[in-house]
Length: 240
Image (cartoon, one colour):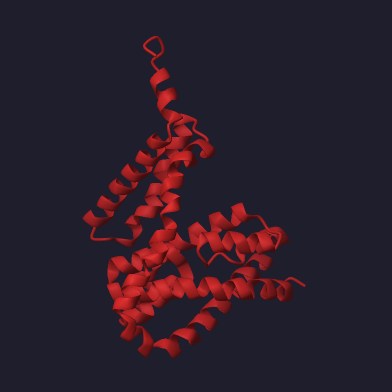
């Protein structure tokens, strides 16, 4: 390796531990910057981690497949992290049960709005049918959204990108929007964040308030269920 100054990098770049370390270090730095700015929505750590890691991969000529060989360990933790949302749900179960009816009503209205609005806007923009179908489930968590996309015969990769962008945009605008509208009930704020921007919005809600995060987690889970049932029907009716 001493004969080639790049041989060490070539060796390390094939090691999954390198990309796991890069992912964790970049996120830790982005999160520290977010904390230093008092959790300013524009300093969302997920947003900045994405472009920093993407730039790093581009500059080093690293393929996504190589990168994911290490990042998959973080991906694996998405399941346990989602299940862990049951802890604040249990701790705030009385507050949750007291708002069950408004939640269900908001769930139906929000879910239908998310599906219909993106399909109509995409249709108005003249996007191909495959793209429209790929965008339809963009407000649910990525794993579910990609599954829905596959059943519709759409492109799961486009769905994944749209889902992540939706989550980031929701996490950025939810707090300023709620403040501007004068909505102070953290139950409503959190539920709206989880419904519109799934896991990333839920993470943002937990940064603001535990009750908001709890309701965001509930909205994220319920929206995944309802959307998986409604998207095929809505897409069929709207795209006739």
